[in-house]
Length: 242
Image (cartoon, rainbow, N blue to C red):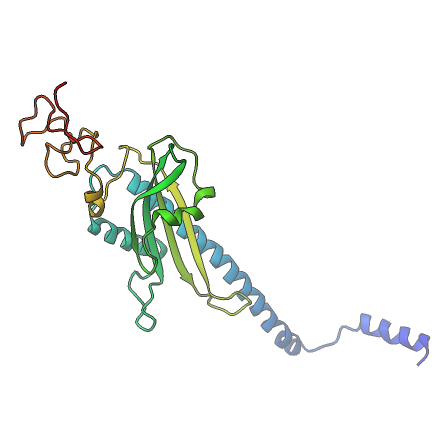
């Protein structure tokens, strides 16, 4: 075939307008559906990430405003709230026994003497365990600089996300994280950790301790403590008149 004949055929192919719409639709429709499905899946995973992060912020803000001692029921209901906000079940899967969503709330304090954070208490709902002080090594770079003795509320959530369509995106875990400073009190207390904190020096008659005499309440009424001799200092020794 000569070069002239090739040019003639290419010109005829370029100018040809005859065809079958049915055949063109049969070719293009599957391609359009794949493109639409891929765009929808990637949009949905970013949308769900945003929903989870907003739910995280809402829970962190809610906990930061608490001034009463928090009970386990509070965290059970908070976990249910997470499920409502993210439209996830908070019950374990019947087949795997795993939770589709998880929540962990941790309060950490900063000690200037050893320049480190310590876990005051941690509560988890779902498959992830509560956080311990040795686990904070993985959080150091994500924690801000705060004053000595100050506390932070860490909120973490997880969601098992499975794409509706298979378009190159495998099932993944959406994780969110945030930290918040207590707003209306220097600390947020958890009833499950009350035995680890006798509330020394907070001047609150409801502070944890064996009695109102031993929690340094300013308005203690269940003992005679006019001279402060019953107050328990951090070293475990009672005050006495000097």
